[in-house]
Length: 210
Length: 210
DNA sequence: CAGCATCCGCTTTGATACTG
DNA sequence: CAGTATCAAAGCGGATGCTG
Image 1: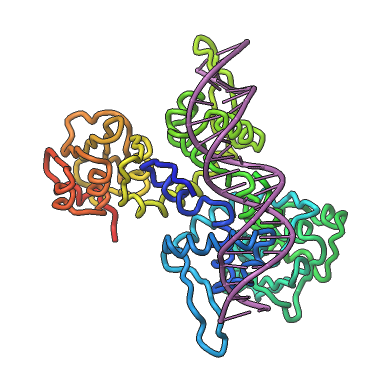
Image 2: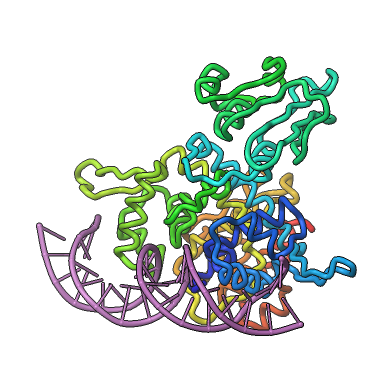
């Protein structure tokens, strides 16, 4: 990227991570941990392969990403964040938080990958009655099921099916996420094709305040 | 900007504010408050005027910036942040914080404007002994002097000369800012041409922890 | 197959000139 | 003051080819 040529902290940050795709590569590595080149391509639908290679080189050069040859028998290259790259997490989280209202629009050709939703869920939900027994919600949307679980005051989402969930939400990503985060009500979500199994009242337990 | 086409909160945020120059325009409005077109151009050296016009239109369209005709006798157009635009402040602050280590490099052709430095100073400094009488430091670098003042536990920087400062730092931006934020020591700063008037020990009072 | 590099057409950006 | 118009250069997207 061409430098802004400003002696300004924000401008210098954008000199380094302001290029197209760059922060999304960082997102993949913060959510998924160390990734192969192919994993990154899968998590960044639409990126041109030469651009991914370029960006990875730049990120390596600026000390944000580290490339390591995984030990045998894996024998593949792994890309991961350096400590300096990890320090981008607060900024990525604030941008993610700011973008949440935009999730109320799901365009027909939007790709949906479950691990992107997990990042948003972890940022937004809290267990409002942690003294009560834990609950589990399963989301069936995107490319994989998501298990949302209360655990000592927090709410954690992870890939994979939940064992015996208290509630299962199935449908389009906007309907499922909108219902979980309280952006739309249950009636509206059902009108969009949401179906559920279990007691939807437990949604109140994890929904964000305000 | 072309959409990433991902149903992901970060990607959708970047669809809106990921274009080149866009976040720097937001920075100008967060630091300076309502601005005229010409003020923005001054605070964004190097931007092409057609790009500034384009970006302002887009920002208006996405609900981040509001354009208002100032009442007579000013009779000029003012651009300011909407509440939704103000909500970008945490993200801008985190990016600014992340970029601070990059300020240890000042390139010869970097533009320096004092209000950019103010944003960094406000983020980093705290008054470590608020019970003692307030102190004032004047910085002479960039296009205007900066007054750094302790006030009820916080440290605030503002444009304009300080009245009777306890310490004055004069020199290149890197030397002045580096000294104030503790990125370089006094000897190193003097070797870079820093000069000062007053007792440099008061720097310890405001310097960041860690 | 993983991890790129090359080529080409298109879009975005940059620099400058001009206008109500 | 607050832009629009124009055109060249750089960046990006998509397809394809190469190498261990």
